[in-house]
Length: 254
Image (cartoon, rainbow, N blue to C red):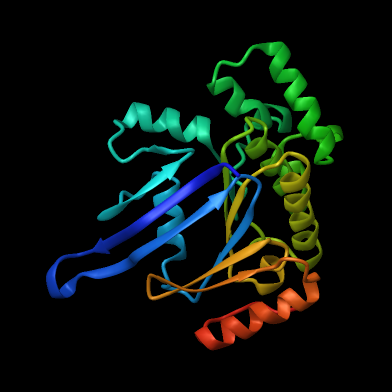
């Protein structure tokens, strides 16, 4: 299996001396190609800091992160932007779609930034828009869509460049339970059909149960890990709740 992400002895400290706080404290793990991994933990556990570090936004205090074997800690800003654009796809809670662009323009924006030719862009657009069920929405603007439709557009935009890693930050946070389930089914579809490697931060145990592996953080450290294996989603959900109860963190239950 190809190793897509390697996090080795990651430390992120905010502040210095006695006032310093370690948001990440010697965190190490790896993700293989085609995995769908969720990160859970109570507020302040380090979830967002970890995601920001992997997404190249927050530099580490110590340790190393590699994506497809490449470290980005020494890259200059222009190189870092290109690395982020070429290696990563992003799905956010608030969609981050541009209201001044049509759905089609939003989806193909990453390809335009990469200066991909028109024919390849059109082929990629047709492939992902059809697969993710937004082909009939291409001429509309984001404000004309429902929340669930906007997130499917965001998924199409994230996957269209075939990135090494898709990062999802509380992607169901702005959706109701029905659209949350639909979005997670889209994630599973992307994972299985496009072989997308996904790392998702969530506090929702029901949504995390769609993943194949879960890392639990507490006080900036990896507290526990669960593998779904052959378990059905219901049994996996109960295991997640048990670990979260042990952590003492908040969860959303269904």
